[in-house]
Amino acid sequence: MQQPYSILDLIPQRPPMVMVDHFVGMDDEGSYTTFEVKEPNFFVEQGRMTECGLIEHMAQSAAARVGYLARMRGEEVQLGFIGSVNNLQVVSLPAVGEQLQTTIRVLQEVFQVTLVEAETRVGRQIVATCRMKIVLKG
Image (cartoon, rainbow, N blue to C red; front, side, top):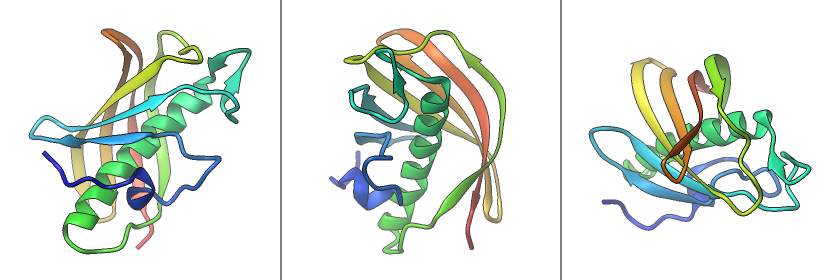
C-alpha cells in the first residue's frame, strides 16, 4: 500500500505539536492516519482531547497525505495552513488511551488549495467530521 515513512518525514510539525502517529496509506477512497491520545499533550485537558486538538489532528492528517505524495515524487514536504474549517461536528472528545483513525477524502484541488472532508473515529464510533480548506505555501 505504501512505503514505510516516519510521520516526521511527511509533515512539517515537530514534537510536541505532532498530532499523527502513523500514515497508514491511501487508496481511491482517501488517505488514512492514526493517533493515540496521550498525556502530556498540549491538546489534552482533564484526560480528553480538546476540540482544537481534533481539528489539528485532522489538519495534520491532510498534511500527511500531501507529504506522502510529495515524497513519492521525490520532492520536499511543503508547509501548509488551514484556510478554513466548515461543518465541524464533534460528537465526543476522545479520552487518553483511545486511538483515532482518520480518513481524509479530497473533494477538490485547485493550484495550491485543497478542499478535504475529514472523518475521525474511535473504533466504529465517529467522533468528529469537518470540511477543511488547506492552502500550501508555494
